[in-house]
Length: 449
Image 1 (cartoon, rainbow, N blue to C red):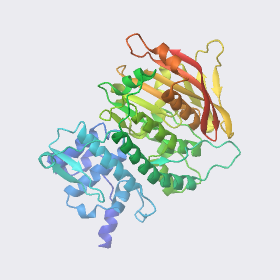
Image 2 (image 1 turned 135 degrees about the vertical axis):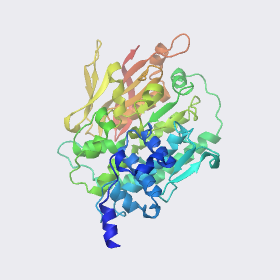
Image 3 (image 1 turned 60 degrees about the horizontal axis):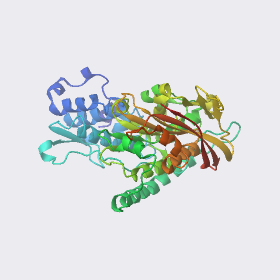
Image 4 (image 1 turned 60 degrees about the vertical axis):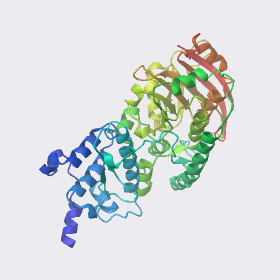
């Protein structure tokens, strides 16, 4: 028994199609799993695909009883045979993502499949459910859905000053998750059950109608605060292309133990400010819960931004997808070498405008800058709304200015056509950050296209 167990530990998931048993080619459950991992919901995640194929293969070969968290860690995630699942929760983290991706697949491109694959909660053995036994297709829950949220967003530490303890950051984020989930649930209940009086027309109404009131889906994408912390700890900013490839998984994290590093690389953290922005969007009269979806940046795909609307929250340092608008925008945010701050670049300064804007982000009270941009999506058939700041207070300033509208009303009125539709525009804001809270926000430049 000890010899066979050792052999099983040394075996790894085959890396090529030819390595699987030949009879799999005519096995409907295996070909279903192959179609799932070939679909767009799994195309960018090699580990999730490997996870699914492993548990399906073990089940088909009669080894379902051997599918354990420990074995998945060894076979799929290359953990050493003696690793502890108590200290390393990578399998549980990826199992949550796997269940969500399966639900998304079978609610979308896999909706016509005669079988569905489920991974029941509390287990890792897949079950295959005929559609006839599954009266309601697995529904991808439209936004709002709970997300793991931290109380304070990560920020680059000034040179020469001690960085915040990453262990304390992880603990704070974990405690905030439970609080945030309860708070989000309460928010959704209030939004769903309280009837509010019809408000008077507002300057931003055409914007919200364009984003939420049409036939297209809208993805609401908060910042990836864990990615921002990985960049900060490694002192290395990553562009969108590397983010899509998952290169952040290989960023060196000096002084961080393997378990905590895995948490940072696999958990979905965002800031409390982003949660507040999302909750405010959900209360808009134009918001349509059937067509609005909360999507974490690591789960977003280029195709999503070709065929749908999107609200992108955060700058390129915490939400790399914001960079997709750089080619069509006049204002853009560039991070400094070593993650030591960021600057807004003004590509074509007008009289009275500066060529760049930077903040003294390492001071408790400082001037900061932010961007609001309403631009076309990648396919030219939808819209992008970007809310970006040089720091978290800047992002907060952008959202509050747009949602409360008094400062930005003149820009929105000039951008509104006679038929009520909205021209694309950009707005540059200046605000004061006091302990990461924005105040005194003003519009200092704008572009209307």
